[in-house]
Structures are given as structure tokens and as C-alpha cells.
Length: 384
Image 1 (cartoon, rainbow, N blue to C red):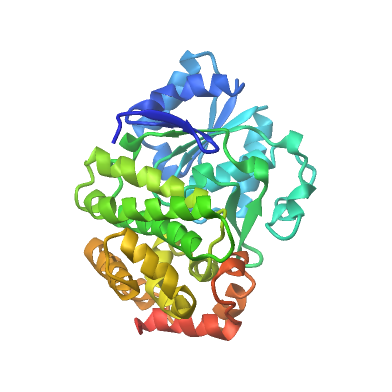
Image 2: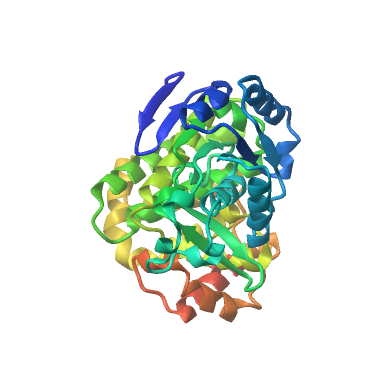
């Protein structure tokens, strides 16, 4: 792994240990003079956050902190962040964190100077056209987990608490203008968070690879992302201080979010309602659901899994599925949803919510609500 590198694909991306010190300079380069740093309360208490803010002050930037974000960010969280943005007359956002912090920050930025509501930008049809592109604030993204890849994404997943539904807020200009990917910021992640977020990155790459439609660039990126995860996720979990493993996983995470321009699938179509109903960790949900969804999709993805297996040095589709199950076991992912306190009582509701989730539109098989309910119940009971 190189110590540091810069690239554009398509976001300007600064990668390497220690590069978070470039935050103030990066803001200046983006024309941001008074950023709002948006993160979660856990990160906000860590010394490096104050160090980032002090470096911005030393560079002559005005800066303030907003930290009132839940692990599954809500519309209310975004509204509060937006109020802070406007009250402080900010002109840009520093999005710092895992998926929750990054998604909430991007949602604040897209709504910075809009007259429409957040839900008017739900990823349905051409809703994104409801936003005035001139009213979107620039974003510098600094990921602290290797999972969602939200630092290179054009959407945010936000919970509508009134409807108990996770909604994807989308606009092409939501993609951050720059990313600082510093693996040193991920060194303190606990093993279970490293495992769950790493499996989230795998779910993005894998669903993008299996999605129908023609996008060879996304397909190629997904293969390499999966290969990196196969090689480095167990090491990142077992040896959290391994800076190379942490760095490779950061890149694999960004690759997943780049690849899923091709689409996602039933893992996410189920994980979104489960996250909304049970407030469970998104990456962990995808990790548990993964083999059950792959098995349900297998009639349509056998050829894809065979090809992927060859690329990864595995024998065939059966070998690939066996690897997924063994990886989950090795890094401590539960085998069933029941093990994290989710039962099958709401199977019908989960199926009805999953069938209308936008992520399911690019699943290899068009599942019905009943199909989703069946997959959900198998995942609850650990019935492969």
C-alpha cells in the first residue's frame, strides 16, 4: 500500500495516514471559509476532532461543531443540523464519521439553502430536480469507518420517524467535492464495528457486482473491492492497529459506493426497513442477511458467482457461498437475526416495506413482499 496517493474517480480523493492535517487547506481549496463540522456525539468527544477544529481556526477559518446525530440519522437530526448551519451563516460542511455522520452531514449540505423539504428529495423518479443546485453547500468528507462509502456517494439514508421508514435522499451534487481518507482515524474502532462495517462494504461491492444492467466499470471496481475485503478484513478485525489493513479497507469501502452506481439489491431492501423498525446497525444487518439473500438470488446469479469465485481463487459459486459463511464466522458476525434480538413477528410488515424499497429495483430477481418475508424469516431463524 502506498503511504499516500491522490486521485479523482470521480471525487478528489486524498489517501494516506496522517492526511487529516490537510483539512483546513482542503477547505480553503474548496472555497469554504466558515465550515460546520458535522459528526456523531461519540466522535465529537475524541481529541482529534478538537485538533481538526483548532487547525481550521489557526488557518483563519470560522468553524463550529454539530454532533446531535443518532446511529440511524433521522429527519429531525438533519433539521437540527440545518438550523445550526443557517444560524452560523456557514458556507460548507466538513462531514466526519461513519455512515451516520456522513449521511447526516450530506443531507444538511444539500438542504443548506432550499425551499423544498428534505423528503421532497427522496430517491423516487426525478425528485432530485426539486432542489436548487445553487443552494447546495460544498462538502469535505472524512470517513472514520470502512463500510458505507458515503464519502463518495450521491445519497443519504435518513429515517423518517413519523413513517418508521428509511428513505434515500438523492441529488447528483450531494457527492462531496473532496475526501480525506486517513486510515489512522480508523485505528480505534472496536472489533465488532470493524467487522460490521467491513461486511457492509462487502455487501455494496457484491450487490453491485450481481445487479443486472450494463456497467462494466462498476463491475470491475466491485471485483477488486471484494478481493481487497477478502484479503484484508480478517486482518483488520484481528489486528486493529495494522495500518495497511485499515487503509485497504477504507479504499474497498469507497470502491463499494462507487460500484453501486450499478445498483444494490435485496440485502439493502431488507436492511433498510429492519434498521427503521429495530434501530439496528445497518452493516450488521447486511452481514447477517447476506447468505440468505445470496441463496434466494442464486438461480439468477450462479454465473456471476462462478466468475467471482475464479477471480478470488475460489472454485465455484458453492465455494464463494462457503467463503461468505466462513468469513462471517471468523470475524464474529451472528448467523441469525434472532441473535441480535429480532424475531419474525413483523415478517409481513418487513416484506411489505422491503418490496417498495428502491434498493430492490436492481435485485437480480424481482421478489414479492411474500418472498421478502420468507427470506427475512429464514434470516431470523438461521435457516439457510
